[in-house]
Amino acid sequence: MKDLKVSLGAVTLDNPVIPASGTCGFGKELSNWYDLDILGSLSFKGTTIAPRDGNAAPRVAECPAGMLNSVGLQNPGAHHAAEWELKELKKLFHKPLIANISGFSERDYVEAVEVLQQDSAVAILEINISCPNVHGGGMAFGTDPKMAAAITRAVKRVAVKPVYMKLSPNVTDIVSIAGACVDAGADGLSLINTLLGMRIDLKRKKPVLANKVGGYSGPGIFPVALRMVWQVTGAVDVPVIGMGGVSSAEDVIEMMYAGAKAVQVGAANLTDPLACKKIIEDLPRVMDEYGIERLSDIRRVE
Amino acid sequence: MIFTLTENTSLSPTVYRLVLEGPHGSVRPGQFAQVSVPGLYLRRPISLCRWDENTVTLVIREVGRGTKALRALPCGSRVDALLPLGNGFDASLAGQKPLLVGGGVGLPPLLGLCGELIALGKSPTVLCGFSSASDSFLTEEFLSLGCDVRVSTLDGSLGTKGLVTDLMDACDYDSVFSCGPRAMMKAVFDKTDRPGQYSFEERMACGFGACMGCSVPTRSGMKRVCADGPVFSGGEVIW
Image (cartoon, rainbow over all chains, first blue to last red):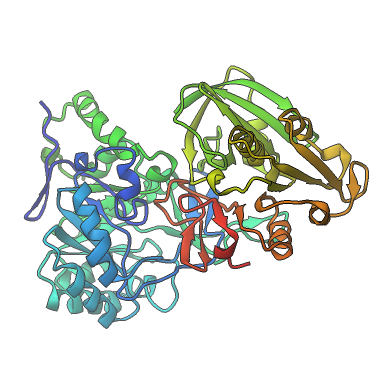
C-alpha cells in the first residue's frame, strides 16, 4: 500500500494533488466530473476584496504545448465568496482548502485575508503577487523583492493561517524574490504563476487576446517551472507548492524531486476535467515503477 | 469520452460533416461538444447538429488550424470529445409558430432544434442565409423535416437576393431562435419584438465553466458562454 500523504508545514494532505487557482473555479464545475474529496486540497478562484468582471474577450489562445489566458481575475469579491461560494464548496469538498487572494494594494490583500481566513476550511492563504493579467497590481508586487516583502509583512500581521506567497516567473532572479518573502515571514511559497506571452492573429493582423498579452500555461512551461522550484527550494527553508504544466503522475513526482512538498495542476484541468482524478489514480503505479513507498520520503535532488 | 469517426463528408468548399459514434448523455438542441484535435492543446467547441442514441453529427466550417485538422481525420479515427456541454435552446418556450434564423455555420444547431420543435407539434419556419449558392448547405435537411424553408444569398445565386433578415418581413411568427454571425443576430433582435433565444460563440478553454475563459458581459452580469450559454435570451444580451 503506497502512502500518498504529504505535509505542508503543519497541514497534512491525503495526497499532493491540488487543482490550481483559476482552473477549478470554486469547485462546482469539477464536481460534475468526479468526487472532489479524492483531491489533496483545492486552490479556489483568485479572489479580490471587491468583485471584478475581468478582461474583455477573447481571453484564451492556443499555444504550442499550452495556452494563453488573460481572464484578469474575474471573481465575485471576498465577501460574496465567503458567504456563498465557500459554503457551496464545503458541501462538495471536506478537506483543507487553499484561499488564493489577489489585490491592488497592501490594504486590498489584508482586507481579503481578514474576510477569507475566517472560514475554518481555509487551511492556507496563497497570496497571489504574480497575476500577469491585471494592471496596477498583481504581478507588479511579485517582480520587486521590496514590494513582495512589504505585501508578505502586511499579510502576516493579520494572518492566523499559514501564508504562502505565489511567485511570478516573469523575473530575472526568482530566488531573490523568494528569499525576500521568506525573510518577511512567509510560511511557504507557491510557484510558478503563468509566463507572460502573446499571440498574433495573422488573418486579422491583431493580437489574439483582447488584452493583447496573457499568461502562458500548459506542459510547455513544465521545465521552466521545475527549474525554478528546484532553484528556490535550494535557497529557502520553507515548504514549496510546485506548479506549472504538471499533467501526469510522473510530472507530480518529478516536481517533488525538484523540492516541492505538494503540486498544483492547472491548465491540464481545462483540456481534461478528469486530469486530477487520473493523476491521483495513477500515482501508486508510478511510485511502484520508481520504487517509492511514501511520497513524503522524496528528497530534493542535488 | 472516446468516439469513433464513422463519416467525414464535405458539404461545401468550407463546410464538412463529421459523424461520431459512441454512447453519450441526452442532448438538448443548442448544446455543443469540446472536441480534442490531434496536435493542438485546447479542445475546439463545436455545436451539435443532430444526434440519436449512439451518434452525434457535427457540421463544421473550416476556419483555422483546429477545424482544418479535424477535416483531415479519416473514418475510423478515435475522437476524444466532451459532450453535451452548455445550456442549449429551451424549445418549451417556443410559440406555435417559431422562426429560426441562421446564417452560414450558425445553421447546424438550428437543425436539431427544428426537429425537436416539430416533435413538440410546432410549425417552424426556417430562414437560411448564405453568401452564395456555392457555400449553401443543410437546406435539404431542413426541407426533409417538413418545415417551411426560405433561403437568401448575398449575391442572389440561390433564393432571394439580400440579407437573411430581409426574409423576416414576410414571415408570420411568434418566437425567434437564431444562430449566426453576431451582426446578423443583432439585426434579427432589432427587427423583432418577439421573444428570442440567440446562440453565441466565443474562444473557449475548458468549455465546462471552470476557467472563465469565455466570459462576456450581459445585462445580468458576467456570463460564461460555455456554461451559462451558449444560448442567451435576446433581452439579456448587450448588443
